[in-house]
Image (tube, rainbow, N blue to C red; front, side, top):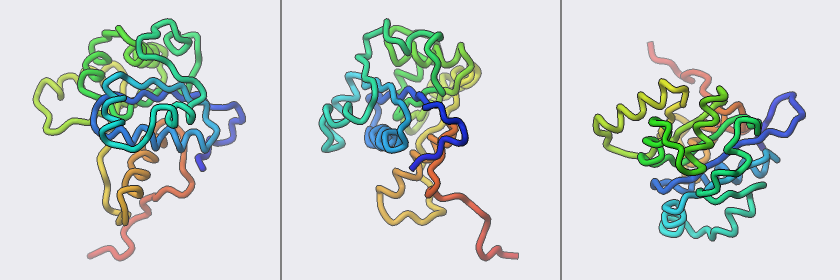
Length: 200
């Protein structure tokens, strides 16, 4: 279960899944947020629907059932498109280069980009789990622009120091680190405590 600290007010998180590979990461984040009773506002882009069907066995209805609110990506009048609607931040997981470009250039022509822009202008956390490799200079420039506006660039990089025994363990480690950056904690997640047998 996720820990939300001492604040008893229910947290509200915007989660967007875009068309980049790694759709299972966004789905797993939604599962964990649902288990923790975090109020989730979900946007799935049209390319993401294709990626989900290609990479996973999840059906759209199963994913939507995990969220409290689901919005169409073209619904620019949704509550989360306004700064007056308060949330604890937004996670775009995975984040495509197209979405990165929209955020970096404040090109808010859809609900994902608009919600991200709202988080930036209101000073709320925005985590972009950019999923692309290798990166050319244009990609890096866009990351720099988004970071200068206040976004956190957090590619979903696997880690190995906890010696994961399965893909599920690796997925959970990636997702838990991203959720922690939003102030949400998995009590059972691995935390580095130094080398057990440091070399001298």
